[in-house]
Amino acid sequence: MLGLNKKLKNLASNGKSIKVAIAGVGQMGRGLVSHIRELDGMQVLAVVNRDISRITGILKELDIGYDEIVLVESKNKINLENNNISRITIEDNRLDISIKEKLNQLAGEDKLIVTDDLAVLFVLDDVDVIVDATGSPEAGAYIASNAISCKKHIVTLNVEADVTIGPLLKKMADEAGVVYTVSAGDEPAALKELYDFVDALGLEVIAAGKGKNNPLDRYANPTTLKDYAESKGSSAHMMTSFVDGTKSMIEMACLSNSTGLVPDCRGMHGPRADIKDLLNVFRLKRDGGILSRKGVVDFVIGDLAPGVFLVYTTKNKMIRADLEYLMLGSGPYYLIYRPYHLTSIETPLSIARAYFYGEPTIVPDCGLISEVITIAKKDLKAGDMIDGIGRYTVYGLIEEYNKAKQEGLLPIGLSQGCVLKNDMEKDRPIKYNDVSLAKDSLVLKLRRSLDKLDKDF
Image (cartoon, rainbow, N blue to C red; front, side, top):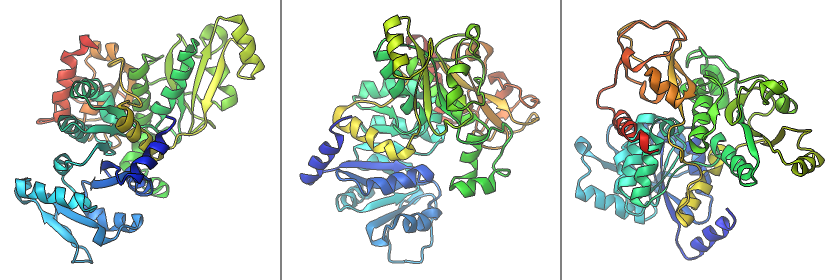
């Protein structure tokens, strides 16, 4: 990563920049727009948000003037107090040649294009990198597949889509000669740095995990967490995915698919432990710990949050002596940890790395090693529709992919919009055979393609 800032400054000194488009301006997306606008050598050309009515507050929060933007309205129309704002209306969702030409002209004039239509991202010729900050598997499938088709690099904070179809997206990107990568800044990428470091030294990984930032309540929902989410500046459904544990399952599945590490048990152990306890907890059972095997992913509730950790070992007696001298443990288990992750603040690192070096930050190199399966959050009835991640009907648990496949368990990334064929008891895993799958789902179509290619990964 050395030299990225210098490369960006050199780019800026030559009057150039990495042109970025961002899908999703929730908590992560807003921060990313603000950050990039202050960086030399990067420029945000376009921002897409499903709910365009939030644009007034977003502009005010980011201190972006109406004279700096062009509002491209497609699905929704919006009234703003400033009626002189530049507008383009897409009739019948048709991006004809004249509109495409006008959008590219405005982008060339350093106008920030703001829209509710994802399709706008793929007609802007100057965009180098598209960032997906939506958190929706369906939106992620659309954004990534179209970005790759248009030969744009794709940096995703949408780990939900990655654990569902990431290996296929990586294959598509490799074939197109562009980068597909999960973003730096989230726990999987922070852990991958530790894993690569320890693995490159020839040390043996025992466990890799994250500190959970929020309390664990499998049955939380957007109503029970409304006030808590508002106090944290997050949406209620995103906060629900944190608190009910689904997000931790997804993040560790992402790391699993990148490294080959596996969950030790369905849902992982998730013990309560502080940093000082990690080496005693994450060791093999025969040595007094909780693990039945080496090479696992997990999470911990305690003072490590919002950091990540890695427990490792070695048979080399001289290295053990050195590690003990360096106060990394008393053996045979040793600890390395990073006490933070900076979320979207680190995303520009992935953008620059993809642009300058053509390298990803973290990708599912191992294929599907882990799956995040769908569990009933409450008693459900036949005919009920599953509302997906971070809502009222289901939560996710990590499981080894091969076990999930053998049992026919439904990935949570495919759950939204599915209709139950059978009654489901609370905490029961939901299978493919229990649901009618959502119709016209792109993420389902891509997942079926991935399942056919499973043997190749």
